[in-house]
Image (cartoon, rainbow, N blue to C red; front, side, top):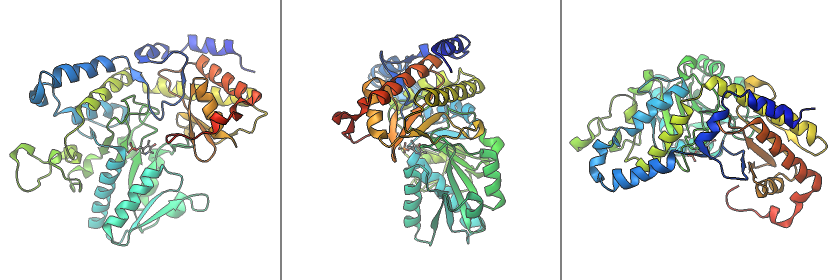
Amino acid sequence: MLTRADCLAADARDPLASFKQQFIIPDGVLYLDGNSLGVQPKTAAARCSEVVSQEWGIGLIRSWNTAGWFEMPGRLGNKLAKLLGANDDEVVVTDTTSLNLFKSLAAAIRIQQQEAPQRRVIVSERDNFPTDLYMIEGMIDLLQQGYELRLTDDTLSLEQALDSDVAVLLLSHVNYRTGAMYDMAATTALAHRHGALVIWDLAHAAGAVPLDLNAAEADFAVGCTYKYLNGGPGAPAFIWVAPRHQDRFWQPLSGWWGHNRPFDMADNYQPAHGIRRFLCGTQPVTSLAMVECGLDVALQADMHAVRAKSLALTDLFIQLVNERCGQHPLTLITPLEHARRGSHVSFRHPQGFAVMQALIARGVIGDYREPEVLRFGITPLYLSHADIWEAVEVLRDILDSGSWDRPEFHQRASVT
Ligand SMILES: *Cc1c(COP(=O)(O)O)cnc(C)c1O
C-alpha cells in the first residue's frame, strides 16, 4: 500500500517541483481540471495590465507596429511550434479550435478534390469531441457534393473504416473523455497508405504529451491554448499545416489578415505565402498576450520530464483510487498502457455527476462528462504527488460517507 510519506518522498525528488511557483493556485484548491481550463501564470495579470494601460491606452493604433501586435499570431506560433515538433513559420495562434477545424478540413478536401475527386468520405471517431463531428457535418452540408461522415466505434475499427473512398481522417490525439491516446506516427502512416490526409486535433495533447508532427508526417493539426498551455479563458487556438500543403490552396475563410498585402486594400484576394493565409480577421490582442505568458512557462520545462511526471502521477492516482476506494463502483476508462494514455484519468461512477459536485465543494476541482464520467486532469507543472494523495483522500471520504447524495449536489448548472 502506498502512503502519504511515499508521495512526499517522490515530491522531494521531482525535477519539476518549482514550476508550481509560477502559477496562481487558490488556497484550498486542488486543481484537477487543467485539461479544460489551465491555471493563471503569475505574469499574466501584469502583462494584461501592460497591454490595456500602455499598449492600448497610450500606444493606441500605433501599437499594431510598435508593440508587435500585427506579428503576434506567427510569433506565438513559432514559440508553440517547439512543443509540437514543428518549425518556424508552420503554426499560427488564431481563432478557435472549431474554426481551425473548418479551415483545415476545407484545405484537406480541396487537395483531395484535385488529386482524387472520387474520395468522398471523411472518417472520424464516434467518441470524438462533439465540435469535431459537428464541424464535419457542417462542412458536408455546405459542400452539397455527396460527402459522408464515417465514424469508427466498437463495431467499426479504423483499419476497417479506411479505404479508397476516404478523403480525410480527423482524430483527436488524446480522447477528451477517456484520455486514450493514438500512436500519431503509426496512425498517420496507416491513413496515408490508404491515400487519406490526416488532421490531428491536439486539444488534450499540446503541452501535455511530447509531440512530433513533422516526424509523424502529419498533414494538419489544430488545438487549444487554454487547456494544458494555460493561455486563459477563451484564448485563441492554433493551426499547423505541413509546409508541403501550405501554398496549395487558400482556405475559405479568406479574410484580409490572410491576404498577401492586406494594407494594399486590393479588391481581390491574394493569399499570403505560407501559414499566414490561415489567418482570417483582426486578432484578439489581449488574449494573445495571455497565451504568451502560458507558453513562456511551458517552454522552460523539458517535455520528456513533463511526460515522465504525468505518467507517474496518473499511475499514482489510479493506484490510490484502487487501493483506497476499491469497494465503491468506480470503473477506470483510461488505458493502463503508458503508450496509450494522455494526461488525464477518468472513472465512471453511476452517480458521477453528484460525486463531482461534492468533490468541487471540497475544493477538489475536476469535471464531469456524460455519461457518468469523473474526469481528472493531471498537470505536471503544478500538481505534486502529495496533491494527488489529498485529492484521493477527499474522494474516499465523500464515497465512504455518502456525502455526495445531498440534494444540492444533484443540481445541474449550464456548464459541467
Ligand atoms: C476542448 C476541445 C475543443 C474545443 O474547441 P473550441 O472551438 O475551443 O470550443 C475542440 N476539440 C477537442 C478535442 C477538445 O477537447
